[in-house]
Length: 215
Image (cartoon, rainbow, N blue to C red; front, side, top):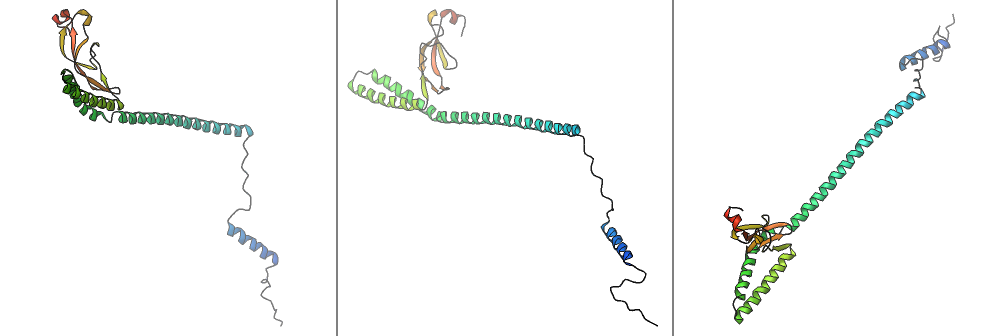
């Protein structure tokens, strides 16, 4: 009795080369888990439908662009207003930074003016020298105040203005002087466009207005 001799490379009995190939294909298909058939290709939209979609997207982007542009213009205008407001406030602070100091100096200015008036009434030579010195100091002080925007109000002979004048008394006058400042008791001053101190004045009133209690 002959015993068949087989090598390790020979397939088992009853299994041919075709069966081995089919087994390998089956294992490969099961391992991948994917069907053998290819997925269907996506349907291509008609040209007019695709054009409508593109136009709709373009319209939406245009709307968004216009909204952003309007917002940018609004922010730019608000920033310009803010910049101008800050510049104006900064200029006002610079102009009126000396307000408190000037107000404190005004009584000294009044006293120099009174001293000058008093020395001018004295005809002596010594009084004249004093008047010259007082006048020099007064002019220097007035010039220094003018550099920072201080100016005096000249009320005498002007119509009474409650925004610049403070009436401390009234005196009877002819009709031609009714409502005019007859006497200035204390000079008023402005710092740029701001009133530092009103002028204290005597206002003329006709006897008829005074008799009827008119202001």
